[in-house]
Length: 414
Length: 223
Image 1 (cartoon, rainbow over the protein chains, first blue to last red):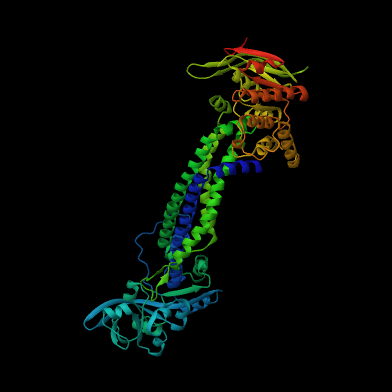
Image 2: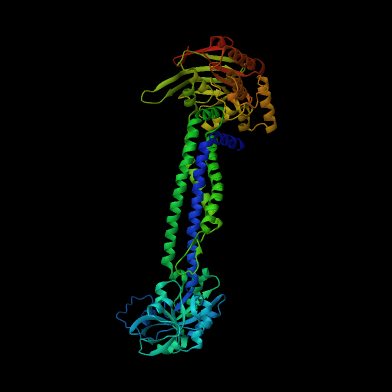
């Protein structure tokens, strides 16, 4: 093997300029691969982190995953029973015995939960009516399971405990209706109840639709307003490890009987979009390395063209076709490996520079650094791509070189 | 003397729209320690016969036995292994690897065969170069050597694995008369003192005169 390495090295060394050019191709390919993938992966992780932070890890709603089965069908599971035009019973919506369910969820390790009663109400102020979502919450529990407290820009979450008529609204909604902290607003529920509520806090998440339509008040006050005493229609939960949400949600669903949706299930469309984005990204950066591999192909092909006499003499000496192929494969892989290592350095530099770029992002009060992912997996992937490209670029010319018939070359040279 | 190389009815035809027969029905037996010269006009098939005898090419028909081993059905790898251990080639052009020194060129076949440990390989390479009058030139690249010196390096390389047969194709063809005589003397010496078989293709009558036997080939057939 050392002999093959020596011959391969001699070929690369004597064609220094071409070797450096092809090496540069791989270096740039690997560096851009790392720069792009670290940025894409970093932004993906940052996005997921924000998603995980801003949405409940598990949402238990007053719905069931599967519709109720009719007793006739339940009783004859294997029979050809079809029950048509059944009008479901009029049920009182909400999670039955939500406090007990809450205790059950609280008892699960690594899980914190909060009850919410969500309803639609009309804000009536200065002749304007605005439909908004009103969530009845328990501030002490809510703080534990959401980041809403971090988004409060005026007042505090506990203010709705202190003032039974207190309500917290989005800053965007306040601006839209020309409201300010301390102002009162009429809130009309779908059952006709009207309450005058005082604005005790403003929040700003940066998500315009949410900021313009979401409001919070004390749970018991909302229950009274919506005429639904002792009812919650949602339980939201937060996990110590958000990536456990899918399995924990299934357990919660089995435990409570109500539909429990993990953040992954709720954001499946976004996550699949991210996956498509990753496929596109790896295709693009893979294409960069593919282009770089043409440089290797070029070098190995021209070395073989130039070294046909050497191939003939090595074969006449007793080198096998496999030896010749190995020599040229080593050359290609050496360029791939050296290019990967240098590409790591150049790529790390690019990643560092990218990480220093600061951007003002909507929803963030301060400019943030571009999120760059430094995980080792992408370095391994970049090297794998580079080595595979190098191998693919070398294989054909190496095989061609190995198949050269020495006699044909010797005849031509004589 | 025992036959080291026996060719029976060797024929080599290049396929194509118009097949070309390079060697036709050649039968030849060469003894161990014999110096045989293959002569003939240009295009007569001398080199083609040499390539067949040197296992660089496979006959279309006929058989070739090397040290009692029939080689006709051997695959490429087995033929390569036989060339490595039993045959040494010296061509008209030296065909040294330009990036390697004279010493490294001579070591190449030994390194590939791996029969000797590295230190013995080094010793043998230095000894061969010294025997061929190249002491002091060991670390020179081919481009730093004269034509005669290069051809002597090529002979040293052909001898590296101590093969019983040396095949040469116009070894003096690209040399001046002084170097030519020198190379011829070396080859004769190999036969005389090392009991090695030398098969040489040449145009050079003077070179041929020193051989044990001259074989003439015309239009691919032995005359």
